[in-house]
Length: 309
Image: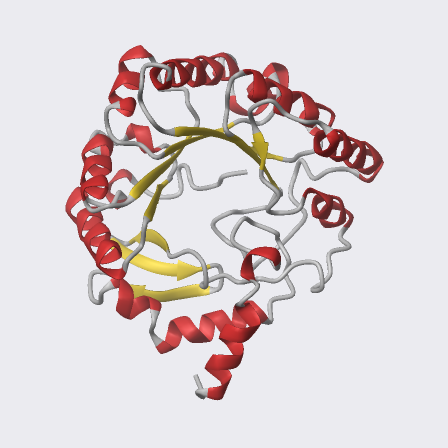
């Protein structure tokens, strides 16, 4: 579950101008997608200006949200701000989701999805998605959540593995809400039902492969199943002590107030972090690690080795 909220004081929010500079750097580097996450992006009063700015730079906006702030007026503003994709965090059906997120959260999320889907029916073009973190309490509901997503015209749904702290990928421990051993057969059955169903609208993302979730919660993942490629696919920017920092799960590789995104991404420190990723044994199967999605990883690492980098 997300541990970002409450970690930093309000003054640690990155400024609009610094976000614009990062977007400028990313556009110059040829990056085509901007993921805006948090916390909750729609708490920012400048979120729509940021979307307009990145869109003008030729980038596709992706926003992750808990959905609870989206009413009719907000939905109209979102639809008019050139979104590419809106991704909702949902933790199960009503009772389960509201157990984690507070009473009434489920209803607000469903209403937000309906409002935005209605905007699409009027000629607005963007996609909708759902992210669900697999936990002990929601294992019996996985199939039904996909079914609900299909009914709501959601385009994609992905299942995420539970981690103890998404602000610290290195110090691992078994988190609360871990799927219990007695739930593993049910998890396997839910996955089989999801995969054999021909869904009308929704696509179930297969990264990670759903079968790997079983091995993950059994503690049986092996390097042959999953390859860490942190630092190869996605440039992450965090904000700490009033500085925007480029990072991978293994460390910081540049202060973007001091160097360009390109320079940080291609720095020796970044390359060392990638080599560390290649040797990672702490398999957490987050969306940025996948053997299937990183077929060129070995070639990339081999090239770096030959160049002595």
